[in-house]
Structure formats: C-alpha cells, structure tokens
Length: 79
Image (tube, rainbow, N blue to C red; front, side, top):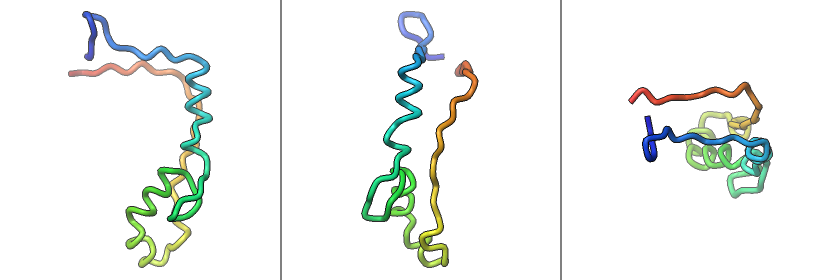
C-alpha cells in the first residue's frame, strides 16, 4: 500500500472533481488529421490506420468513451 508519513495515500473525490471528469474535453469530438472524434479514438485510428484501411472497415471503426458515474469503490494495493 502506498503511504506518506505512515498514512495511506487517498484521493478525496469532490462533486466538482466528478463533474470535471465527466465533462472533460477528452470525451468531446474534435477535428484531427485522421478524422473527427475523441482524442483516444483518433489516436488509435492514426496508430493503426494501415490495418484498419486495408481490411475494409475504413471509417466504420471507432473507439468512443462514454463516462458514467457509478457507485464509489475503495481500492487497496496488495503489495
């Protein structure tokens, strides 16, 4: 478990932090040289374009993220 001064490291989640994550620009479409889409989607399209394009899927392949608020969980390291 990661500690600092003998205490476990924790992230205090506030409503503003949750709002900032859910409304992050990373989930919004943007114009890239590989097309229009989310950052992660366009990064993967640019990285694997030669494989996508040659297998007939062309512009039909996308990886889009949709953030959803779920019940809080506490994670602990076993190391």
